[in-house]
Image (cartoon, rainbow, N blue to C red):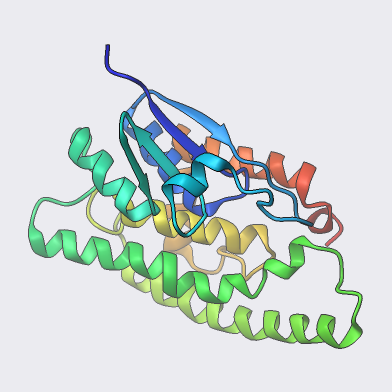
Length: 228
């Protein structure tokens, strides 16, 4: 009997949720274990299985028998090779390269200003100067994000998906944009193509589940967001 995949995830981990969406879109059975998380302590104490598998000490970690993988991009590539249908990468090398660049953009470039909004998940910093610095950084981040939303809207145009059919690019961008909305970033509504794309993805069970579970986790773990 083939052992079931084991995923170590985090309730508010954007990158873990990327992996969960891919697993659920492909219909791959897996066992999920959430690691401990609070806004006050983060992921401390670190889960021993995560520490053993990932030198970055972070989720997601995927275990397949004696193979342990970390980093959402590496995991998504492995899952697509292991379970090629339905594919999450386009057919040609050029198209796959463009798709990978969009996923990289979502994870490392677009997410950079989103990080400046994460302070909103916590109570105001007790140091007024630090709090004001956070607020100012958040306003600058919103300006950058507004420009990026307009850019992505134009790039998507009339397509249903960014790379022809559903791909890792859509998964990565969806999760980063979900976090912009979760953290009170610029609204999607003015960007008609992008907003319609986001709604279409939310109609898919895998994406809806991720969004609903993050909202539920926030109600428990991020009371500061509820007071905004």
